[in-house]
Length: 255
Image (cartoon, rainbow, N blue to C red; front, top):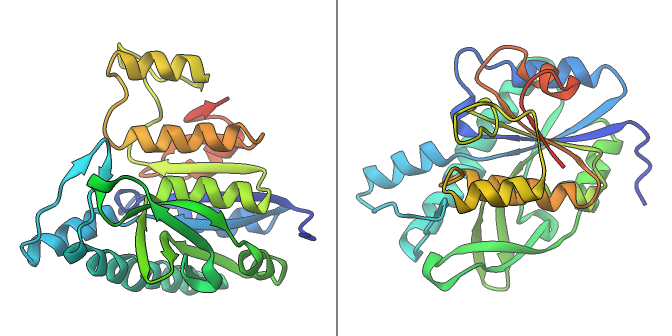
């Protein structure tokens, strides 16, 4: 059983949010000085696309998920576990933090199976083994998790939003925040919805207001919210956005 008594917050960081104005990492370190512990799960889609393009490997998205054929899975692993994870850990430690980079392969953190045949090596988390993450948190380290999954003889590209929700549920997180490059979920007229329910989400899906990469993000939010986790989507490209999101001042809360 976890001995964590502080508020436990999982933050999913997308590669598109780590721009010049982003302060998510400094926000995390600032808030860690209070009664809150953090875990980071990161994506890396833009860099994966760039690397695949360099290698002349075509990128295809199906319902917001990157189809990952055999020739692409090693590139995905190299980018997520090597480049992006190492850069984030280094940046946090340069700021005075104590980050430790791990992947879904470490201690079989994310056991996975194929999501759909047409997506090839895209997986869905079938089991989370959270003991390593919990031990790191209890020893005052900041885990930074790359979203790859494992099964016997295979690695899987796990959507980072889905991985963050699965991990949040497994460690008993209190909060889950998705830092993205939009202000949150908007209605048909483009107005930001500060709170949204599952029935409203289904209506927006039926009318094609929610499409592309927002679909797996919203499904991940609903999975976490169903377990009582306070779940939010906020714009991570602006200064202080994580602090504002956790206070409820910006973004969309999913209930």
